[in-house]
Every structure is written in C-alpha cells, then in structure tokens.
Length: 41
Image (cartoon, rainbow, N blue to C red):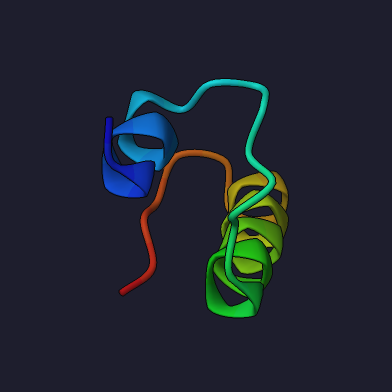
C-alpha cells in the first residue's frame, strides 16, 4: 500500500500528511467558513 492511497482515501490516520496539505486544509476550511458555497482557486 502506498502512502498516497492512504491520504487520498482521507482516512483519519494520516501521519504522513505534509505541511503543505495541512496548510491547504486549514485554508480550505477557512474559505468554506467565510464564503459558504463559493469555491476559491
């Protein structure tokens, strides 16, 4: 099993999550909260 598969599945166990992904997640959550519905690039 590759690490990619684990992260792509979105399982709760994600020890190999990169900082970039973590930051993207935070930004996405913030954007979703601020503009409920509209997607930002």
